[in-house]
Amino acid sequence: MTLQGKVALVTGASRGIGRGIALRLAADGARVVVNHPGEEALAQAAVEEIKERGGSALALEADVSQADQVEAMFESTVKAFGGLDILVNNAGICPFVEWFDMTEEIFERVHQVNLKGAFLCSHQASRIMRDQGRGGRIISLSSISALVGGSFQTHYTPTKAGIRSLMQSLAIVLGPYGITCNSILPGTILTEINREHYQDPVVFARDSGRVPLGRLGQPEDIAGVAAFLASDDARYVNGADILVDGGLFVNLQ
Ligand code: NAD
Ligand code: RM4
Image (cartoon, rainbow, N blue to C red; front, side, top):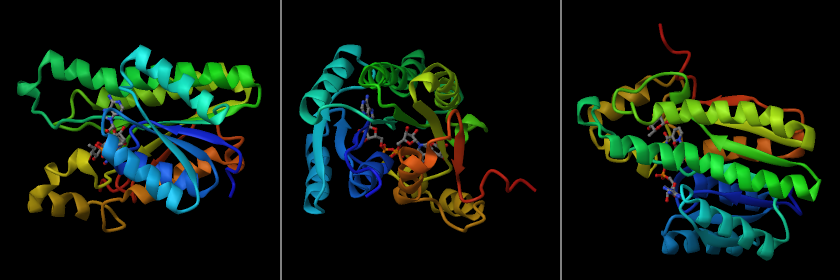
């Protein structure tokens, strides 16, 4: 129970990687806010699962791209749990779109949710953490896509590079307050975000085959790394990024 007494907020935790992280942080002892953008039933199911395992959690709705909703969510978190120690910027979208079909609207929406959302949540969380005076953790889901391109992701890869860069700058700004800021760069994790893409068995076999460990990832593969970054063992890790891709990135030759 390395996170006993801590309060964590995970954005986009109704499913996928965020859900996996919320369950893991709760298992490690944190009281967890399960943020969702209107997926009440899924978020409640995550909360119930945490409670059944003896943990403590609360679902809060907010679209992370909307400043007023984000502010209200952090106010409710402090009201319910008395403070905040860990923020996980996980909420993200990636509609797979061909470059010549890309629209300004899709490009902007992906930037608003992924990058502006991480900015708004980090801004709110860091103010609370600064005023508490007991440090904190900001952990953001960047991606292998911060390092390499993706042909159907021309709107998305810049947001993941931006999130990684945001954490690097915030590591400098917030380090003096004892607040560490780091990124996780997952490779390919099987979730709703890419379910349709991997319905094509040829694409699935090709991408699985590229991973030296022989499989695509699961949310739990990321959750353990988030738990480490949230823990005291990671107290001197700041401005770093951890690539969690089964060896995909180095498999070029
Ligand atoms: P997912 O689609 O299963 O989960 C995304 C979550 O974000 C959902 O809970 C969704 O409700 C939430 N969300 C979407 N828009 C939101 C908004 N406006 N406000 C609040 N929440 C919102 O996908 P996932 O794979 O679990 O993705 C989680 C994060 O991990 C994303 O940031 C994604 O870019 C990143 N990531 C995923 C992979 C992968 O291969 N799955 C790889 C690298 C990085
Ligand atoms: C990730 C990475 C994965 C993809 C998801 C949608 O950042 O590019 O391969 O499945 O995004």
